[in-house]
Length: 207
Length: 207
Image (cartoon, rainbow over all chains, first blue to last red):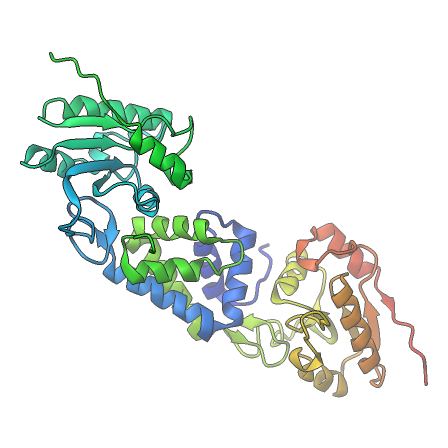
């Protein structure tokens, strides 16, 4: 027999959806729901509205894949950025980390993840089509691969180097500074600066 | 200069509101927002709707103070419960914990917190008016004080015992089983059963 919880199916559902957020489990989702319901007008309704607005207005940039309220995003449509240098990252949060460190004045490409043998994620699931389109057009001189120093990140970097070798573009990789097993989002700004500064050209076999 | 984050004020606000949830900080709020925005139709919109519905439909029971979609709540309007025994708890989550353990067949009173010298919370901020009204009317034979074994919980129990002494009702306190410093919500069912079973009458000075 299921135990009884007051609040009905509405509360059940709210707690269930909250518990799927990264960082929240069933117990903390209960606490979160109760704290929101303690002040519904001041806390629950504003959060619901912020979510509705975010869902309605935020979209993926058709050029680089980051999330923004404009399309193309603020970075892609900024004439003061250097559009000849594309920095490839895994996630939007990695782009934010680099922007926070104010270390890259070019533009970005957000893959949305990495290749992963374990998760069965192949190239078609990464946001690479617009990358190859951009690199294939005039004006792009350098692609910086700024993926995490994980097994999957390294495999994805290698695959991208391979695919980018057919274009007339310099491919570099952030190197020193990214600790083994780490993701870009978790780094301090100094380490991010070091990693960007220490980027090196990828050795390419001219075959 | 503030660092730039794509997503505009909408995303900024969503992250800010999420970071106020208990259990989430600024970093996990960013992760939560991004994970919701990764699948807006499947995850963000349903959560926003669940919140809107909860805000519109869930209210405090005018009798006991718990949260429910009906008013009076399911428990207060259940003729199969023993309405002569009122179990007083601090929070809705404590009521849920006792219901989960299926250890109390009576009804409840949810105070919404405890007295607190530190937080300057006095009796007028607790949901006690309906408790005294219920105890003052016919048919209530026992009030079980099931507050946490904290300094504030003990002070609140003591204050309630004092106030309830003027009514013709047996006042008991859950005793053995609640570990010092613990709150009811954090206990296993067995300990909750032990605490309820070991309740004892409060010594009252007949003066």
